Amino acid sequence: MKRALRAQVQEVLGKLSPARVAAQSEVITHNVLRSAAYQSSRAISCYLTMEHATEVETHALVLHALEAGKKVYVPRVNRRRYLPKGSQEAKAALDAGVAKWMSMLRLYSVQDMQTLQKNSWGIPEPGPTDGPDGQREDVLGPACEGLDLILMPGVAFDRNLGRVGHGAGFYDRWLSDYAKYKRQPKPTLMGLALLEQIVDRVPMEKNDWPLDQLVTPEGILPEGTLPEA
Image 1 (cartoon, rainbow, N blue to C red):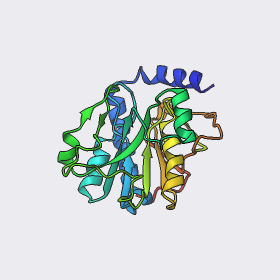
Image 2: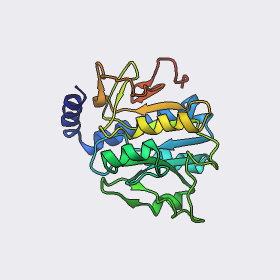
Image 3: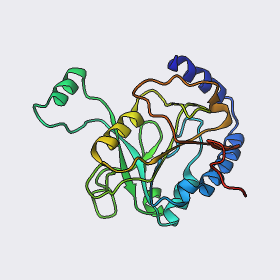
Image 4: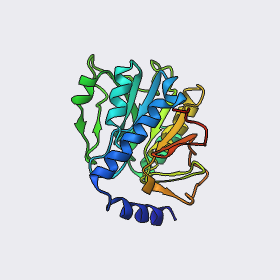
């Protein structure tokens, strides 16, 4: 069901003009910046827009957060995960082959963001050791106190705060790791959706994390989340 839904939505998205995506993204950015979840946050994570995909553009959001003095973390897709030698997890990973996994690494400044290299998907991403002073702070590492807000991408969303991603499961697995290792209050999970990404119902499975809020050009769900202008 998810595969068919992705294909259906991606077909629609492929017909959108860059101007329509930019216009919707501008309104969505405005709605995020006005939200209590964003304004009260001190540390956030935000995806960086994929080069060849039609999705909400986040460049202006990340710039605003950096200039506002918030701690900003962005995703990096890694090819090899550290697992304790001889552990059951390591054995299972060996049996299944090396799987890609996601980490959230800190961006330190606008200048830092401008130096990021693009990965094979055309997404700018940081390296674990190319920060201004070497090693970058990782959300799951001991130096990070935790996140207040996570701005999440997706292919399809529904008004009951369901989300379908691109199919790799990066966010769902990372959120499970966050809940396991950080032992901090759960961050607000905020999805960003173009109108064409909203469907009647998203199929959700037991390992899928529902959103807390969904931001669209029409406002923020649940209703009443966005303050009056």
